[in-house]
Length: 432
Image (cartoon, rainbow, N blue to C red; front, side, top):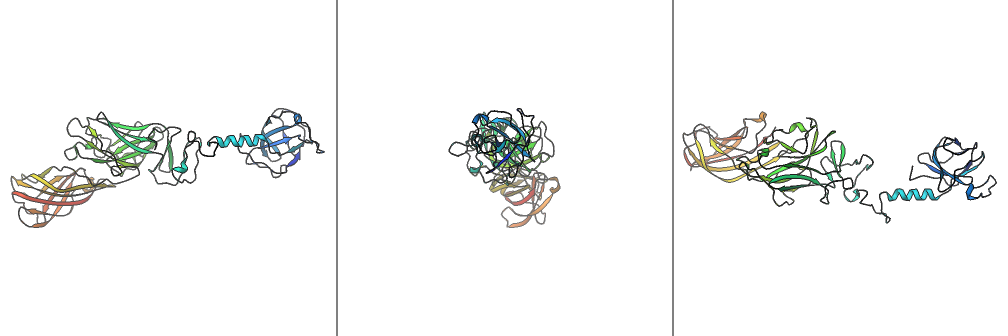
């Protein structure tokens, strides 16, 4: 039934032929000029005689239906507390404003509104306070079409937490509660806006070197993780987190839990290579060293918990493993300056290290970085400089293979043995 019905001022006509009772009668009007065809209408039968004499109310019937040509179709008899009855041909038919029209209209408004005209938040999410949306349609599919980039949440936020050394990343409504039918979260993935109406989270327990975050380079170091939402038709919307920010499909993640490109996903039962994924934010967490591999998180603020799509980390540090080429050793290394950053698919780093060489003299000092570069970029070489003992600084080079950077002098001559051997290296590498 249409709650919101149109009318027609000063409309009156007559029945072509008489009708009995029931809904099998054909109700044909002599004129339907000006009557709406896009909504139902309530017409009043036999309020007055053809001479204009007002009939008793017991003889009046109101019928609600739709106009199709000259016929009133899909109709309901005896509405607005009138009595269904037979009407002869020539009976006067009018549009008269009536209680059924007004009451149904008010009932329709109260489905989503309070009596003072405001939205009833127990029945509908008031999106006007969240964002100006275009083409808003909330229907039985519980979806919205809005002009916003992928990955932006409506009424949603990331909530990371640690309990019993286990890390959970949950999606919550802005009120801190789980999403539900009355507290939905909306996310655009690809060209589709999905609604999330039930609890959504992923937990990774202590005891595993997740993401290789408990490695010698990264154990006890704070790492920035990127939170993803993905979708497939069977599992629906899923949540995950990863050290890489550039993935747009499931196939770009590693499925090995200890791999640096792994993504911890709430369910992968029906995951397929082409499933779409979008970054929705970023948070910081730390994995301890040793077999315990326990999780911890910092006190969150606007720097280490980002509630929007973001594709780069902060400048973070790591603990390199130092070595040298040949049988030369590089030990007792101090690090005056170090930092790295992941931005999209690139890994940027800078390091200054000062240590002692031993063993047999050779031409390269080496250190590890916290990511393996893409295989297509192994042996990438870029400029740097170094110092051999108390001598002057000389130009040098850095080259990378997997996660090891080698630094040498520009003429590739050997480093001397002893203290105060310095390397200075920085570069931008590609992760796939």
